[in-house]
Image 1 (cartoon, rainbow, N blue to C red):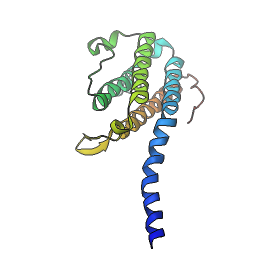
Image 2: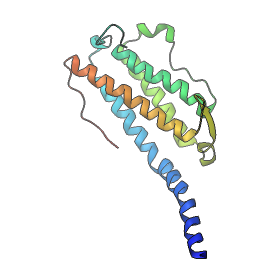
Image 3: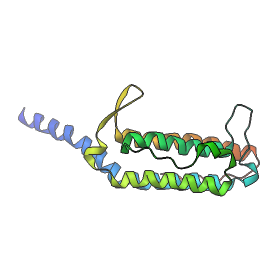
Image 4: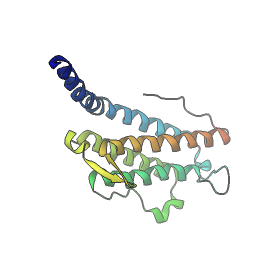
Amino acid sequence: MKNTILILLILFYSVPLKAQNFFTSQYPQVWERASEYTLEVAKAMPEENYGFKPEADAMTFGGQLLHIVDNISFLTRLISGESKTFYDRTKAEELNKDEIIEILENANDYVGSLISGISTDDLNTAIEFRKLEMSKENIFYLLRDHQVHHRGQCIVYLRMAGVKAPPYVGW
């Protein structure tokens, strides 16, 4: 019976350690690869098509990329407590391709710095997001998921505009 309890305790405590180990040892590279792939997708679209959208109610290609940045601004505030704005939203329509790419790169780099600088205790801190309690670690995963979602839409836009999408980059 003591051995069973000991084994259960070891299993109970080892699962969180493995999750923490993944985040600290591998997630920084996961974020970097995901960010680089998004930048490749952004670079693939010719500047004249940054205003492309498949229908009137859809975001433009450039708008999809800025929406990723806006989400980074919103969600990283939950992690750092700092409100970070990467561009003047009132002038979003005036931004060209190179400016949007630079803004996206700066926002992704900011997330990367938060990933590399966060302590395990802070990573496990519970926060409230949309009436749900979750850890700050979950917010990092949400940042990636949101970017992947809109990057996928950008890939569809590329194809609709007759532009070859960059080859897929996975984990």
